[in-house]
Length: 212
Image 1 (cartoon, rainbow, N blue to C red):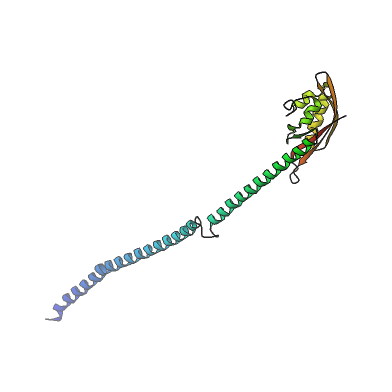
Image 2 (cartoon, helix red, strand yellow):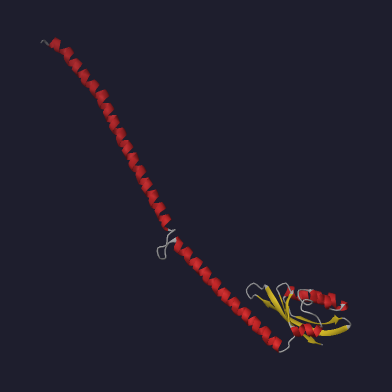
């Protein structure tokens, strides 16, 4: 076979090799690179999902007790602390009520004419001795009803003096007269106000009546 006959064959072979490289090989290479890129993206997605799951797991663990360090443990401590505080307050309130009842018993046993008022100045308790002194029933002396039993000439002055005393948290020290039917009972009213030391809030009043 002459060289002139070989030239077309060689040329065709080179063209065929070039075709095989340029198309099938490049296609295979491109497919490989795509698979490699997809695998890379998959691994990155799995890594991000794993990191997100780990973070969620840390958060979820805060809602379980483990003996002291989780959020639920801290919430439980707050709840227990609140319950303990409420128990202490209830105990203190019970002791205070007991003390108040004992004080009432002691004063009543000594026949003292006294009263208690709330933080607004309304009478919430009047002793039997006080009712006997002014010839009025307990219901006629509770709240602000007692003012209506003061004689008219004193009524406005005493009402204003009492309200000012409560508002300004100062001692109430006044002389005035109650009327029961046609009987006039002149008294000396003396009252002190209980204040919250921190807030200055008026918490109630204690007062006594004596004949004048």
